[in-house]
Length: 333
Image (cartoon, rainbow, N blue to C red):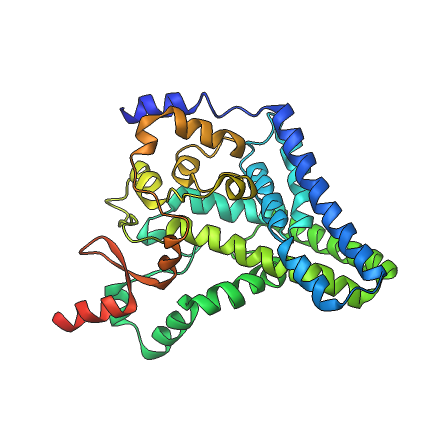
């Protein structure tokens, strides 16, 4: 299928269904608020703190689901009305600790320049090529190795991003992103103060902190696996191709049905980058209907975990390598 024809077919799915959107967001927010209420009740009846923390962690995927809807609002794909997307996006941004307009700007940069080696650094995971790493100084290599370590990227960097960095506007912000960030932060403070008056600061931390920690780890993993896999596509600016960036630079991450629902079908990420206007609930039907979208190699659900060891992109082989593999290649040159 020619690219022009494919994009024409994809446009058929880039239509928001108000009923499906309302049912999805109502269900998600209902579970989100029911989870918080349940934990509050358990806290009131003095259930051991360790049980509340564990339950909060187990319920954290609903925050990820909420973020997926927020993500669709940032693409203006969730409702036909841009105003409705904006209002809902601002509200969900508070619940996910993420300023709507600031994240919308950085994420749009990610979509415009994803897999372009000259445009790295905004809305993506820090990636170096083998040659860049070889030429880097000792301090840069140390920082990069630390950053790419699975324990750091998921258990330090991910919570730090959502809990701390998101409290400030991103690099290159304009006044609208600053105001969006200030609005989100002020609303978070207001909500936290009101809730703490009811259940206390200790109760608030026992409920909210583990849930946000769990959600940040899961969310960063989903983003990571979408663009960090063995045969991922990267190219220099003069050779960069938008179609290949979507089809080969974004993964098809295979997940069981329940996890597809929790993640808003974000595993069909190649489709999302081809047509970000498609709402999350249409991605699977789009995949099932169009043969060419099924022809890329999937990233398996469990074995995809091996991708966390990949850290350097080799321009010669066009593959993402582990540091050990890169060291072997450099040793032969």
